[in-house]
Length: 266
Ligand SMILES: NC(=O)c1ccc[n+]([C@@H]2O[C@H](COP(=O)([O-])OP(=O)(O)OC[C@H]3O[C@@H](n4cnc5c(N)ncnc54)[C@H](OP(=O)(O)O)[C@@H]3O)[C@@H](O)[C@H]2O)c1
Image (cartoon, rainbow, N blue to C red; front, side, top):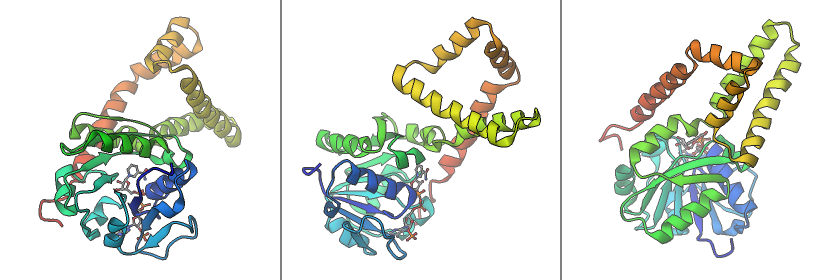
């Protein structure tokens, strides 16, 4: 990635910003082409990157600026990107608000997840009208360093995906925790139950990665088999499994839309 643009990450010491910075360097971006900002004392990692508390200096030293602060801290970020490509990973902050605040029409909203830390995030993203094809290629390469992703056509898709793929390991962990609790209630040692549940998650991920199979086809195959798993799936669905997932995602969407700051909050 020697030819890659210089990247600046506002909030480069954070969970997502740090994961992205480490993924870029692991993919071959020389750390010297990275500028990372934070408010506190810079952490010890990536010592060859340029660390700063000055977000305008970061913007001036970068070709692409990534905004990776929490939505509630967005109002503390003051910089002019002077029409450079700006990529926000902040949940809930609209493209139009970002464009006005950073003085650039070339703005992308992206939504990675916590699996960026292990190079396995899924990152949907959407672009403002002024974003060019060359910008799109940069965004794809940027998030390709820490997983996969897709451009989505509408900004509302990003608000929805915030509560869907943006939650990363949360929903599989919820299922695993329920499996563990049930196994323990049936007398299994907790350590055994935990290894079994985590094994299921890891094995499932690897199987889907290899096969590319549609999960709905996997479920149908188990139901058609008419075995123990079919009995469980049918009982879970009769108890409202699908409705519970839809209710959860609806609540997540409401929360995601509520992250949008009031018009005069900056
Ligand atoms: N975590 C996830 O799973 C996830 C998933 C999808 C999207 N996101 C989005 O990603 C963004 C970052 O989330 P995160 O989980 O990485 O948060 P985080 O770990 O709290 O990192 C944010 C960092 O931003 C820094 N910061 C705050 N204000 C700043 C400023 N004015 N200038 C420079 N740095 C500043 C903070 O640095 P100091 O510590 O020095 O104050 C902090 O370490 C959020 O908007 C979130 O919605 C997160």
